[in-house]
Picture: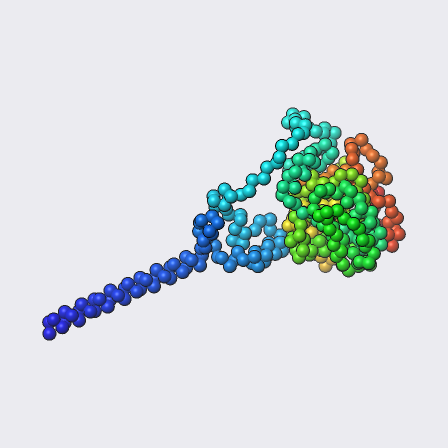
Length: 399
């Protein structure tokens, strides 16, 4: 009996030992699977990276970008954009882009290139004037980045008559040597002429609805630029330049204007005080700016930046317009009023001087060394059919 009992006890201990080992093995496997689901191996840099792999699929990255744009955020979540969190190995593999040997006049730290105009804002955004930049250096830098530029204009109703001159002069002076997409928003596709473009430059006709009132056309631009930024521009270009079509280029306009988000000094108010700015002054409007605030008066017909920043700008303006519409309010200068409200609290990173938007009827002041983009002489009433100014007028008769 005793040997049998001892044998039984030994078998029980062996059975318990085997069960403990299997439980340990199962625990190890479970832990391993959990860790594997949270990590993946990157053979290019011989290291393990943490994060949920499915979030890095292009489909989810695009949805993350769309969510970011819709919410108007300036930065993306690190989980949906792992490039913002780079281990040392990745940083070591970043491509270095350097300029080739160039000869140019040495800049002088003790002598500004211009002393007759202001060249910097209080928030350190440069104001672009002739003489403030070396276009050869800038072209070399932007060529190395292989930058793509999109140009948007609206040729609604009779404004299609300006397209030919606009594109022909743009081909001569705008972003010469760089990749450019012209985006023509129009309700009259058949009226847009066939124009031969240079290498790397393309024109796309985007059919949009027409509106009875020119004010409505003006305000709807923000909505259309916003929507196309989200659906199309984000995949096709790096920067957007949004201008009026009833203009012509008369001198060089290049990559010196590009920045995260830029505005242009209105040619009628570049030297005016805040009291003379035609901001929206009714407190009930979302475009309202008090009389003791304001930096500059920006023109509604010339702004731009990266696609992401232009999206945020146009989204803000459109939402503000819709809020006013619900309250039966229309800002005094329509989309321009909302643009000025945006730039007051979201400072532009670069400002274009009146060289980049001028009307020759204003003469040629001494400080204006170049007139790069000028208004085409036209009869506003004939083009717009009717011009209702709601009892308001500007102090300066430009645009």
